[in-house]
Length: 440
Image (cartoon, rainbow, N blue to C red; front, side):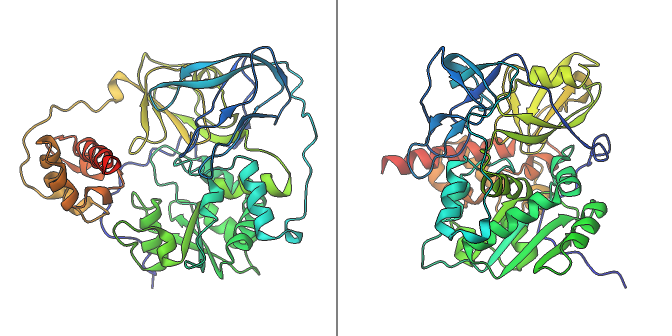
């Protein structure tokens, strides 16, 4: 009898659109003529620049110092000359300070990275190596990893979950990483487990990646790492939904996974942790998926941080049609971009390029009280009610209806037959609530 796959309440299953890149191996992207490396690539305080125009830098050299505990340093993605330190287009939609670097073609390290045996280091030493390498969550959130690895003593961690779900349509970077570079992932998992002291380790993967499940099952055999197949449902890869599926408990409203003794890291983050500790390498590159109907030749690319999207499009053979929309990330939670001059940052899990015919264009109508958004919501909140309060600027009422529990997955907007931009309205309410809290 077929065993029922684990999952969470709510959610939906949008078309996957992964077939164009799921079988394509990771390729190394050539360096562009110019890199734009933002000082703000993570949640928390931006890094403080420590180079100036005209400086010669080596690959992996520190170019931005961390400012405070919730911050990480930034490093040069290759060797070359600093052309400028100035505001440039950023994936957030703003112009933010960045180090503009012209590669010299040598791609030379200043001091060669020093591999260490992580099994000989104490947890605090491992945590410091991860922080100094600038490692952040590579699933898209870009939260500093060393912060997640520093729970207070009264909240011990017993379970480490590794997120290999990649439930966003179109994206296949994590899928390829699990198939091609599982040794890096397993080394990173061992380091994360040692830092946290977790007894249970489980890798969660959606059942639409049977090759990745079979491969990790094989390489994890004889270890204490479990591999769990999960139902194919969006947003299975969201932190709280992954915990609900694999641990069977819900993170309380306003709480954190550590309240349940759980920490979640992405498979890409685990690989970056391995590079930082076992290889002594800072986070200066990542794997990302370039895809979409407008692109001639979609690819999974290993890209240096700071590479402009325009260069990636050229590497992928250019565009088939006029570009109508650029999205960094997936179509459900990704962020629309204004131009191809935006650079790849640490949180760029994919780039989706759409033509005019690929855009959903429905006129907004009135709510028909069908309840589809409520059934789809994985946070069990009432999106239409919160959106209505947000439109009336009644943010205290929106907060009373748990607006802050929204994970902005977009299930409500996707399922709405009236094309009401519900997630945008809830996001507006959350921003207003946070602004009000800061004034108190």
